[in-house]
Image 1 (cartoon, rainbow, N blue to C red):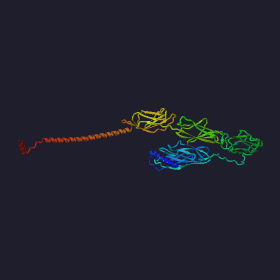
Image 2 (cartoon, helix red, strand yellow):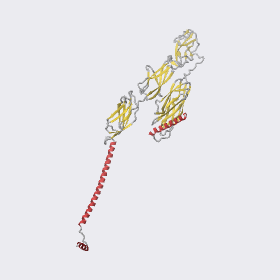
Image 3 (cartoon, rainbow, N blue to C red):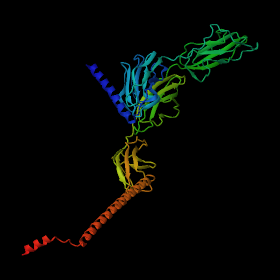
Image 4 (cartoon, one colour):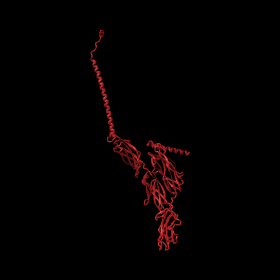
Length: 553
């Protein structure tokens, strides 16, 4: 039942990744071409490390031809050879993590699932995470991807992973180059010497330890000297005393001597030559051997006033009883390695770093070249961006603009108004409660401004910009000075007025003609009536008249 639940969680996680990728990509969606190839790989992919040494390996994504915005993977490593100390997301291209990077030293796995917000990432080596490993036992340690995925930023969440790399590291003591072994019975190097008198003190040289004041990791020293032709004996001795007599007995006739597995420390070779006149003066040759790593290395972060301070100071202490500490090699995240000489400096200070989790890897080298390594994790917190709580979306030109918000208490707030072509910048401060306000009484020229703001805390660290808002400047009248929009609107108004006036004239003329025709028709009617009134009345028939008379009677 538990396995089924895990499968459901995995399916849901994959669905969530694809859904978020599609949702983010659709903002910049355009018809997409055929999906190109992407790869997941390790850097470095090989190296030699000693048992107990800590080293970092970066996980990268390459997508040269098409933008990607999601990547996930499961990495396997041998638990008998390697141990994960920490995972670091400093400098990652990922904007958010669907599954936080995690590791399991028992099962030998590392997993991650992240999203790079739109427009995603396109390039040859985008940093995903870095892993700090500790070498445990001798042998070969291999890193492999057991699964992986890279999704395209194409609005569809297209799978574009075409290859997954691997890495192999050799764990074991780094042995010095083997020196050429002398022949069992080397031929003496003979030089002419006067037959009379005691020989001069021999001049000693060494191919393995040429500088008497330096330390060497090689504990098989080789020494040579010139042997005069009339030499009859060589007396040689090594010990830890500055001055000793190798004794009156000859050790043979030879011009070279090899010693094996000499203990660490400061040693002296004492040598004298003999001829018929007696023994020469003694030559004392110093050589120094150190084959062991330093005794300890301690890294401690110096307490900061606030975790947003981007420069971090570390106390670094190391001890080597034999040859002493020579220098430190320091690497931050997957950056370049740098050499740091402690000299009179008690602490090491980083350069200004971006906000996020970081990893400090330190190697302390002794004067023979042996080293010990250690790692320290640290975090730089981001300054929270300001929050705009009140601003006018629309104002009339010339009106006062009031912007209010909240930010880190007692910090500087810089407000930007970006227009075209005018860009304005204003500064204000938040109070001890974090509230701030800004009054702008300038006459703004642009119609639409984009409003953004950042916070600078008391340590001089800037935040990311806040969410962007728009302010529209409304015109209270025609502004001829706002060229060319004002002129365009002015011309349009003139054209509209001309059309209206033309329409009024046309309607007036039409109605005038209709009125004129109406008057003419009325005049004609009146004229006809008047003409009818002027005509005499017609005489009635006689019968009709007689009838009328009779009726009167």
